[in-house]
Image 1 (cartoon, rainbow, N blue to C red):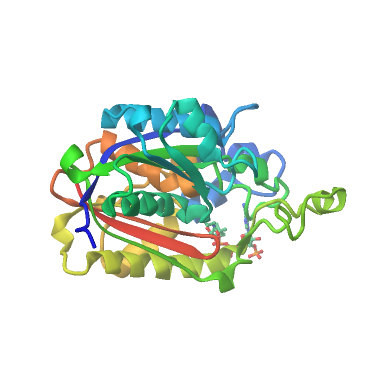
Image 2 (cartoon, rainbow, N blue to C red):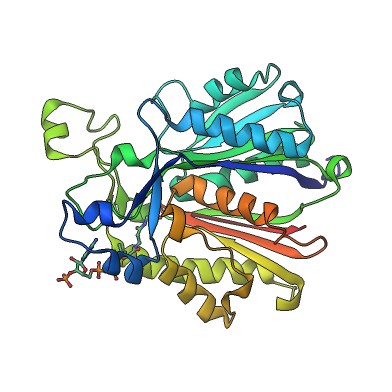
Length: 329
Ligand code: UT7
């Protein structure tokens, strides 16, 4: 077997749609309040895609920014992997349309659906392709248009989500000299598949007038159960990534932006304070697969990823699925 090729992050990019939807928007038609949403989730606003705008459009913009930072031309890409649960179409994959719009003429392209762990999954796939020598330059994306799949009568779910896209360009470390991926992990426990669920969107219950009238195609969450799982899993993943390392070596944890209270509880369990945590949930809500790459890109551009220090990415989501990565910036 060939020696593993060391992999780095050459560039990151993100895009969020222009339309800002504050909590007060939901007060107009739901029994909810800005105060409840802020206290229970940390969310103050989210972005919703404009009419005619969807996942591919946002993914392309985020990817162009990542390519620009990486100084990689689209035609140099060997592979594009897009984590999404809300592709423009069920068929074909969003990644293929992104490939065409970018002009990534040499790249293979496919989607992966691991819900909120979607970016960790595309990122880990990208890393594995490069580490094994199968590819040199790979674009990993997380992009979602969740606003189209929300039941605006369900106050327990529709206030949580937003739209956006994030991306990273991965190359051999020798080409980019930054962001070495030291460790990644992915996991799943499908026995919890109904906890976050769009049951009427696939081949078991395809869309029919009846299923649509029942709202089977909307995202449903069993918030309390997910909350408990999330705190435990996020804490355990950070512990796993930290094995053999100390708190002082870490400059930033970039967690899935699911709920401010979940992030705080996971950190409290670790005995960490919040100075080393990237949080932007107040602006964007939960953007599922886009949440980690958008937060990572904002952290990179704000200078919060310090050369030589450790950055931890951590996410979990529907499936249930989870993933994490340890990076030496
Ligand atoms: O990325 C994975 C997908 N995300 C998730 O699965 C979300 C994870 N879970 C959460 O973030 C939290 O569980 C929620 C924010 C969804 C809910 O917060 P909570 O503190 O767990 O509240 P709860 O579900 O225990 O509900 C408490 C009360 C209930 O009323 P009663 O039964 O005590 O009378 C709810 O009906 O809050 C009520 N409630 C609301 N009230 C005002 C639920 N949603 C709302 C709302 N506005 N939007």
